[in-house]
Length: 373
Image (cartoon, rainbow, N blue to C red; front, side):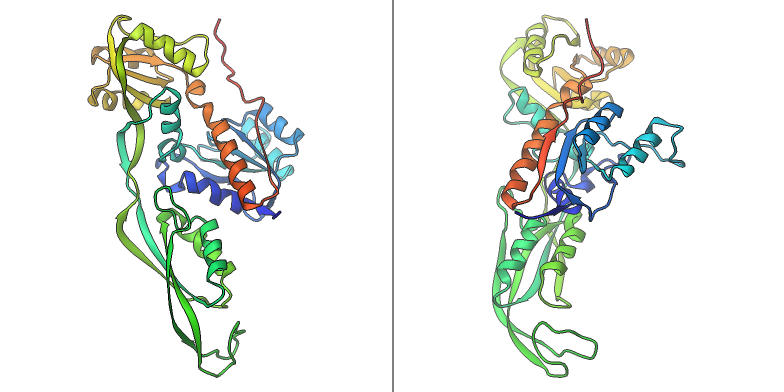
């Protein structure tokens, strides 16, 4: 079994939700902590209020993964005068790192938008608001014969080599590498002042733009040479387009009233808000987890009959109805809580596969603080 550091967990999170997918106004990534700290126990939650932090400290957690960023707006002071200041101080006192994956997790392929759609029974959807088609790069590195597998494994572990549903994708070809160690060098192979010819492999793999820095750091760690030679080449290929919201089409039409009951059961909630004629026909469904108030017009432009989201205000609902769009306000927490289990299950599976000594738990106290009667 191996020891994992905070950066290792960050790399795993950014494989499924690249940091550069986040909206410009968002604040994601490692918000509190040390990338080199050893991580043995992780807790996953949606939010980090005081009682969830109490739970983390009680369980001797090393790292908390949140969906909503614990630090969102700019700060000029960290002191005990504010609840956020007190939280940050307690996190630092207890050596707990906090990593947040928010709108990047919403948008990512297989992320929260897609998970929410699957929860409501949609296997195929389209994106309501396409926002991003990321750049891809080719990493070319030259490694001495006999070390090519070790280097490839290190690069793959850091997130290189993903093409669709395939990992560790690479190509290598044999050749002769030349170099002459000069004064001050500590060569892995060869003698100072002597031109060396070495059997090497040219190893090629693919990396996404947001992962380049992490992968280069890992390359330098696993490569046997003191100064590895590598190239990073921008490709014309693009990553899959991602974006906000999903549009699904029901197999059979239904009424708004009947569909509201279905959504209640699918989300496991006792009550739900909706607006529109209960007998109106529903065929196309727009889905935006969390707060979708900014995307009402985009949802309507897709031809959707109803928008399922959370946090809609009275006047926003009136605007939607005037545009002919029915509304189901299923709640912010209710449309996003599933991400806790999804991230926990992912981290359990991938850390076990990599042989890390990590325990992953889901918060038990991060429940919806708002009740309906």
